[in-house]
Length: 127
Image 1 (cartoon, rainbow, N blue to C red):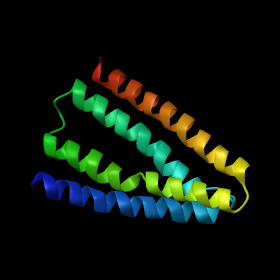
Image 2 (cartoon, helix red, strand yellow; image 1 turned 120 degrees about the vertical axis):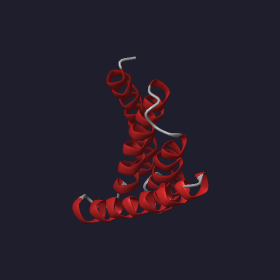
Image 3 (spheres, helix red, strand yellow; image 1 turned 180 degrees about the vertical axis):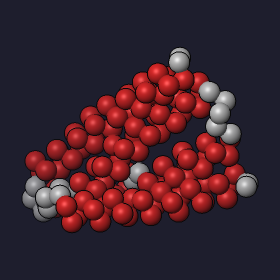
Image 4 (cartoon, helix red, strand yellow; image 1 turned 30 degrees about the vertical axis):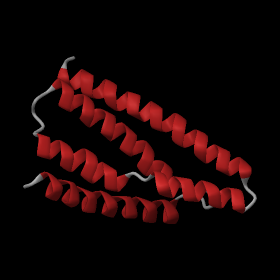
């Protein structure tokens, strides 16, 4: 599979997964907060850090597989633009506290998840 097809195929899967997580969050979690976007961005931060570290520590992932998983699947799964719009919507609705919580939770949890993914990959790879 060519690099472009790898990215496109992965992006389709990642976008579908993001949609399913958003549906779940809308149906199962309290309203008034962007839970779905927070979940995909935190999980995506963990997975991207994990995969990048694993790829650096182990030659087991081919370049096309890395593109498929990182740029494709995780690029389609995570979304800064939705995070931005949902934060702006919270501000426009007069909820600056929820908007700030969204920004802080995304930043702090995303970094923590990225660190955890990095650490897990290093542990698995024995680095």
